[in-house]
Length: 83
Image (cartoon, rainbow, N blue to C red; front, side, top):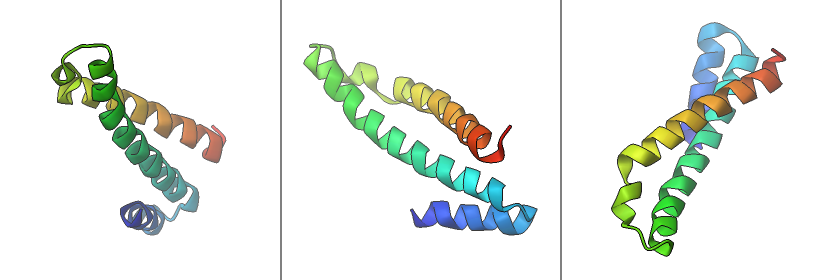
């Protein structure tokens, strides 16, 4: 959480745009929560379905999290910046 606050503060100071700093900070928090949740739940789901949990390893989880992270960023930016 400290990293997100520092990033938000850095963006605010560099670009002198408080709203952009908030967008980056909130997006980072949501992305970290999402990645931790998916990284835990997808292998457990695979095991429950009697599949090899390694199927849900890095490449698949990374692709899903990256796609969702971009969507989260744009949704937060749309809400906060009013685009």
